[in-house]
Image 1 (cartoon, rainbow, N blue to C red):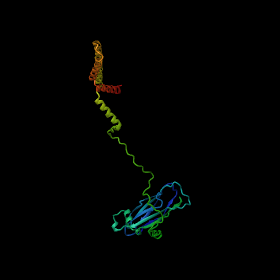
Image 2 (cartoon, helix red, strand yellow):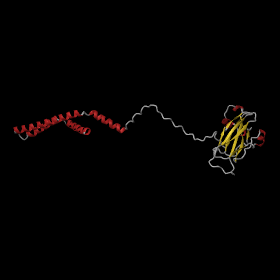
Image 3 (cartoon, one colour):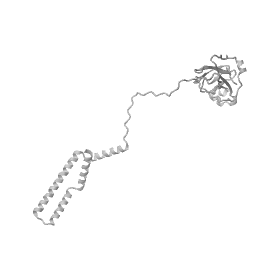
Image 4 (cartoon, rainbow, N blue to C red):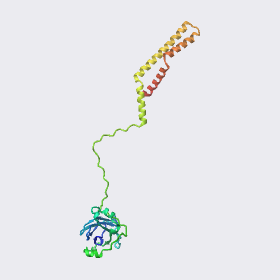
Length: 278
């Protein structure tokens, strides 16, 4: 079962630098509900509202076909090659509550009735043909087709002149805690840890100065002791063999008085003081 279409052809009057609208009247003269789809070979030029729907028995639906404004006006003698295709299929009881898309997908192709509608370009002073009665429409409507002869696509449901831009998020003025400062890199952290460890082990500057003063005082005492022993040996006039023994004894005493570890530590402390404070 197919729907009745009035008019059988769509005529659009010039000029085409503005939108031109025509109305298709689809009528269901049968005893069953039908669903329909409207497709076109030029979906970028036309907008159809509605482009699909349902028609109850004995009811009719008006479909607005809008030709959008063309950039270039076609020549006066140019013929329009655009076509429309109206598909309709009866609604079976098991699909009573299904939507239009599901009904077309589940229905066999042999149950889908297709009607082609041609488009013509008319002059600005041309008169559009009046809508004919239902009987005339049934007599003059083109034959039904089971498959379209051209590449038909569903046009847009409504005309939209402005492009839809993605929404820009509104700025957030709520108070937020400041983000934490970034963590230092691994080499910087290692150097800081090493520096802190050395600083914790080393004594303070006052302690270093005190230790340095004590070391200088002890060295001066050792020098004085060595000088006193040299004077005593000269006065006593000991033999030559006793002199080396006294020197060796004084050397042992000096070694026993100032350990090598202390001298090395003092050198290390002096180097660190010069490195960190000077």
